Amino acid sequence: MLFLQNDMQNDIFNIQNEQDFSEVALAVFKHQFQNNRVYRSFCDLINVHPSDVLKVTDIPFLPIQFFKSRKVVASKDEAQQVFTSSGTTGSITSKHFVTDINLYKESYRKGFCHFYGNIEEYTVLALLPNYLERKGSSLVYMVDEFITKSNNVESGFYLDNLEELTQKLIALDKKGQKVLLIGVSFALLDLIEKQQFNLKNTTIMETGGMKGRRKELVREELHAILEGGFGVTEIHSEYGMTELLSQGYSKGKGVFKTPPWMRVLTRDTEDALTINPLGKNGGINVIDLANYNSCSFIATQDLGKVHKDGTFEIIGRFDNSDIRGCNLMVL
Image 1 (cartoon, one colour):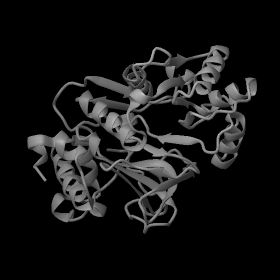
Image 2 (cartoon, rainbow, N blue to C red; image 1 turned 180 degrees about the vertical axis):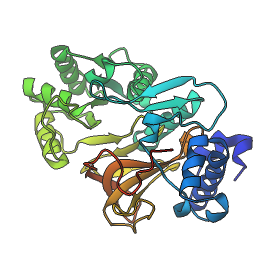
Image 3 (cartoon, rainbow, N blue to C red; image 1 turned 30 degrees about the vertical axis):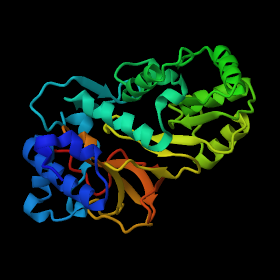
Image 4 (cartoon, rainbow, N blue to C red; image 1 turned 90 degrees about the horizontal axis):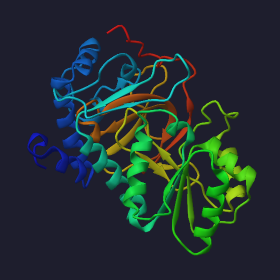
């Protein structure tokens, strides 16, 4: 592998195997320890130094709440884009200061292609009303480019015009056009309440969350309803968040895969600094090497399980607002 400083983007997005991933991850850790003041302070607080980190599982994971209270950056460059999380009125939202937007573009372009092929083969229909209603959504930024790159005049965003979307979806699917319908869960449920579909050429991808618009459902129940309403055998899912520049994808049954530059681990729910063995439920830790200029090692508030083949499932979220065992927000 090349040294990241010489050709960082090339190294990250050309990982071929576990050895490549390990080498790049350890190099990214050293870079962020040296250049990310928030992450360095966190590592100092838990008494971890690069000399202690010999393998990927030795790397400390920064609690995701720091993106709400600190500017988490590993670069002296000005932010080209600031992505913000959605939140209830008056709540503190996460901010991701992206100093090189090309890293995000490269990540979502290559990530989608890795799992689904060329975006130009699809008509992209986006049903993301809650994201469109606010500024700073990284999901809208990504999907907007998917719509543009699809080179299809039928592609586009939909807010409340469900009748227009219904007619377009039926017509496109009927003529054999490959369609990607990506939508937030509550909006997809709104759509199938107005129309029952029998789609043959359409991929339904939910991005999760009722966002306070409907009662939360467990994944199995949600997917069963959507499968029946759209007439499809599987519901696809996207796993991403404001604090990440990469996405995991599921092609059914809630089992997610990551692109080569992303990994998911779980941590002990009682001891946040301990990594679980494969197959044991725990808090989700994400390694996203595309986060080179912020923090690539994040302890999220999701609960899940990682299988032996590296796939993972999300089974819930922590109830408490702070990640148990890692309540170090006094930095």
